Structures are given as structure tokens and as C-alpha cells.
Amino acid sequence: PLSPNGKLDRNALPAPEWQGRGEIIAPRNATEEALVAIWREVLKRERVSVTDNFFELGGDSIQSIQVVARAKRAGLSLTARQVFEQQTIAALAAVAGHATAVTAEQGLVTGEVPLSPIQHWFFDQELAAPHHFNQAVLLDAAAAVTPGLVSEAMSHLLRHHDALRLRFDRQGESWRQLHGQDEAAVQLAFEPIDLTELGAAVQPAALKKHADRLQASLDLADGPLLRAALFDLGEQGMRLLLIVHHLVVDGVSWRILLEDLATVLSALQRGEPVRLAAKTTSFRAWAERLVAHAGSESLQRELAYWQGQPWAEASRLPRDHDGGTNRADTVRMVSVTLDAAQTRALLQDVPGVYHTQINDVLLTALVEACAEWTGQRRLLVALEGHGREELFAELDVSRTVGWFTSLFPVLLEVEGTSDAGGALKVVKEQLRAVPHRGIGYGLLRYLAGAAVPEVSPEISFNYLGQLDGSGGAGALRFAPEDVGAQQDGRNRRAHLIDVSAHVRDGCLQLQW
Image (cartoon, rainbow, N blue to C red):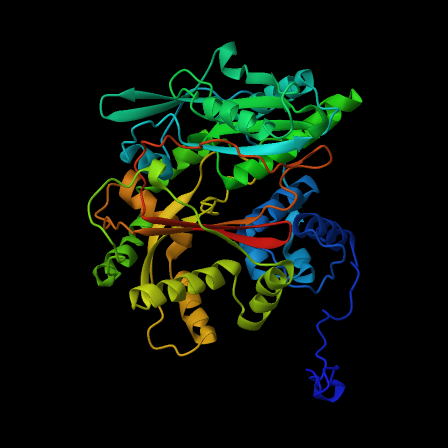
């Protein structure tokens, strides 16, 4: 506030509000000490009190999986559910047990693998080019990263993470999934690319041209489903491009792969033996257990929820033109970003006030934003989840690479609420009512053959979590250049609008 002469009017300033988190209480035993170190690493916080709330520090469901995986390495047994129920280190330490020895297969997993629900969904799309539906990252690599080091490091990852060696064979109207068994299956499709003779101004375009070529080169039947290229840009440094078909990787998998890649490169550079954390339950074992669970009475009880939702009350999104083909090559992207202060308030302040998670807040905002356009405060959304639900006590997929994603419809309605806080509480309740975070929808539809309604939302939403630090430690960080077309332009899109969100460099980024 300013005075009439343009100077600061100190008397008109509001009373200061204390924004601190109170006293930092240090760990009081070895378990709390280990958990504090894990939270600091996962949440990227310098100071953590044993009384801090995981979600008020910005934690989310994906990070809870990372906490569980790191706790196991520290000799502690935890579940993601416990992280949600015991939201402070003091409470979590009280329920933590001693981790038992990993019983997962540590050698090369071979043989046929049942398709998971999300893989069934993928093949049901009947894409024009199913081999070109990828995920990719581009990393700014240190000059000490050489082609030889990268090639050796990627071979370690291929042998350690069995899903990267999966192959897919079409037999009539159905698809079969199996692990490659010969030595060729673990050979990396790696390519060093020298762009040093090009000027800095044209290098990004040349890099994208090579990336487009590599993105289109994966082979579902014969492999590889992973390609890597190391670009030498001279004075601009080195860039490492990793391309993986979406059938064998998801957002959680990337965090595992990039962390392991950094670990392997560091060991190779120091001339030390490569030691990766023990494998958790294989994707094959998980898929087989899902098939068995599909016939269970507990899953059948969820059918009533999906059949009882008022799906027909959702209206279509407004259109300028009906007809036409919704293809990947017609996509346009709108990106928006919150600054660091706004993001910090969203991730840390709001959860404490409303006892919510970031997904609740973003989905409420999505409903309200669309209501301004459609005139309806009701929205049918295809919601993506990480899919690594704790359905089976004997399985642990916290460090397993594969496509685990759950995809399910949710009808969100905020009619009758008058403010943002009221809308948020209603959306939170509606999301909590979904059994097992929605994983049962795909199980019932694709594995159980149950009479689950075939709902087709026109808008999808996916919160990918906090990607800060996901590029690994030390030698690798995300690079700004274009990774190329991750999908063939002829592929038909499943939704009219896809909304994805993530936090990078401390800022929330939304892509429409």
C-alpha cells in the first residue's frame, strides 16, 4: 500500500502472519534418522522434522512409492498405504518393520507374460502405427560420458530390468507378450551421433531430425523397444537421448531407470563394480497375479460401484465441428506454468488446510475451468494413476520397470458448492470413493470380462508428480532440446483433450 505521495504506507500493511513450520525436531532413534534422510532425498528438502506432514511438504503418491523403495534398501519394511495413513516420520517409524530378504527372481526373467489391463487398452486402440507410441527423455550429459560408457551402462540396465526385453507378437486378433531369450535381446540399439561440425544455431534442428528417425524405429516383434543416442555438440556439450516404447515403461519406471543409469555410470567412471539394488517382483509375476485376482470375489464386489455411477449424466464437450479424425498429427499444445511461490503454496499450504492431495486440487480446478466453458459443473474425466496398488502382500513392485498405469473414468460434480474450498472438499470425497484408486475398472473390463460400463471420457488427466532430480544424480540432468515425435502422426487419439501436469525446477507445469 502506498501513501498519497507514492511512498510505502507502513500503517496500512497487514499484520504479519508466521509462515514457518515451527520447531525442527531431530530424529530420536535410528529408524527416524533413516526416514529423515529418505524424506530429504525424495522431497528435496534440506530440513525435515519428525513431526512434519509428508503431504504438507509436497509429497504425493508417486513419491510415497520412492519412500517405500528407499526404506527397503535401508532395511525398513513400509507400504505406501502406511505413508498415507501415518503422515509424519514419528508416526511412520512406529509402524516400520524390518525388511525381509527380497524373494524376487534376480536372474534374467524369460517366458510369456499375460497382458496387463493398460496393455489390453493399448492394443484395443488399433493404432495405425502401434510400434511408434513412445516415451523419451533427453539428458544433458557431462563431457566425461563417452559412447563406450553409455553402451556398457545401458547393457546393465537391459539385463537388470526385464521389461525392457519384452517383445509383442500379433496372432490373429490378439497379441502375445514374451521376453526375448537370445543374446540379441539384451543388445542395446545404441548410436553415437557427432554434430560438432554444425553450428550451434542449427544443432537443435539436426538433433530433432535424428530423434524423429529413432522414435519411428522401434520394433514390437523383433526389438529393440529401447534406443539410445549420444549426441556430441562440441562446445554445447553432450546430449543423451533415451527412447522406450510405452508398452514397457511408465512415469515411475523412468525414475527407476534414470536413478540406476546415474548409479551405473558413476561406478563405471570410477572403475568400480556395478551394484544395483536388488530386483523387486517381476512384471511377469505381477501380471500373472492380476489374472488370478480378476476371478476373485473381492474384485467382483467392486463391480457394483462401476455399474452404479451416473455416467449418462455427463454431457459432451462443445465442438466447432463434428466429424473428422482425431489424430496425433492434428494436436496443438497449450502450456502454462505457475511460479515457484505459487507452486510451493499449492503443494505445501493447501494440503494442510484442506487435508487434500495435489490431485484433488488440480482436478477441482479442471472441473471449474471446464465449467466456465461448458456451463456444466460436472465433468467426466479419464484419470490415470500409477497402478502400483498394494493389492497383494507378497508382491513388491516399488523398483519394477513396466507399464503399470491404471486408467479409469470418474464423474466429478461440484453442483451446489459456492466456493473453491467447498468444491475441493466435494471432489476429494468423490475421488476417495473410488475403490483401490480405480485399478479395478481395468481388471474387471479386460481380465475378468465383467459387464463393466464402457465409458469413454473426452478429456483425460494425468499428474506425473515432481520430476525435480529425476534425471539422476551427478552427471545427468534434463536438457531443453526437442526429443522428436514420440507418436506416429497417423495414430488416433483416445481423447479430445489430454491434460498432464508435473513439477520441474520447483514450478508446476500444465500441458493441455
